[in-house]
Length: 480
Ligand code: ADP
Ligand code: MG
Ligand code: ZN
Image (cartoon, rainbow, N blue to C red; front, side, top):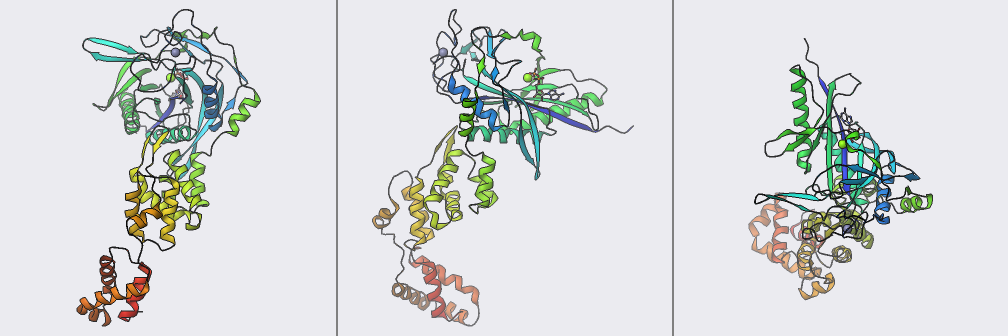
């Protein structure tokens, strides 16, 4: 019998924390990293009698996410209680949305091997995060409720992805979109962007979906593909051995490189969902939605395309300079301020020098110079005041300070030698000191020209105007 070949089917559920100041239903700070249980109040501790009040900023951010993903916004939606018992959930239920989410039917375009694949999004809903159980305090487990009540959107993808690579690309594109919207930190390791991967396989040509397994705890991009590929292989082995896949939730063990059973899959009935009685229906009127739409920034994919089409960058440069919204904004500002230089020159310098010193953390980026400093610096090169090599040195001196490049040039005595007489003197001296090479060059060994340029640059510590050096040497050495 011919072995069937299997087609993987993957649907991703992404939980993205919204970067609001405060939590979804109370005024507590939503920030990551505070000492345990300091950002808590009766509402997020679930104390009796405390009532939730919806955070309008979280709603605005959630609506932006939905609009950016092409979703329909429902004019009226509802919060629901999802009941389960776990120590990190002090109320005994999570406020989420169930059968009436605020948005549905969107899509995300993912580029795989040069072709665009459209992955549909089933729905996006809002919910509150749970706290965090921490294990290994001696024999104890403890709970930190700072995260309880932090706003989340859950973005539920249709099972449209068909390989581990497509799944990880989908996640990267989605993370980029949310990062550039300014509403999420995109940090898998810190858990501000979390992914559950639903994986099933079916014989190629089959249209019915196979039994799925839900993978949890994939907390790094590095492991997304690995975890899914491992699970696909496990299912293939089961089916080829004549067994059947059990619908369950499995965890990813990064150390062992395997998935392991966590629990049998729970169903909606298990959660006894019911409408949240303490919150009115969520009404999103046209004005609110139109305002959110008007505030949508340029999406990263379009920004990249524009950097290529309008600014003349290479696709690679455009990619590198749009890794982070702050970096992209920095580059664009420098390119605008240094308009006469051409954006490609600015891009080159930012890529080769500045990016090395840039660190990003969530929505923030640390860039050691201002866009104006870079534009001013490159203008000094353009007008021949300093050489390209000096520009790099100047940048190294300037970073971390707010010094103006022009004043640093005079402070450091760095100005480029553009005096033809001075350059001619140096060239003549170099030729005199290297008579042998000079006669070889004159006899036709033209490759030696570079040697002379190098010697002159060395003698001037890189400060001579390269064009002038070239012209002068050609004249003195009779090369055309
Ligand atoms: P639940 O919320 O209980 O996990 P849903 O029906 O909402 O269940 O489905 C959640 C996710 O599972 C969606 O992202 C969907 O694309 C995916 N999914 C559903 N069926 C399959 C399947 N057979 N194979 C792979 N993914 C699937
Ligand atoms: Mg699920
Ligand atoms: Zn609170």
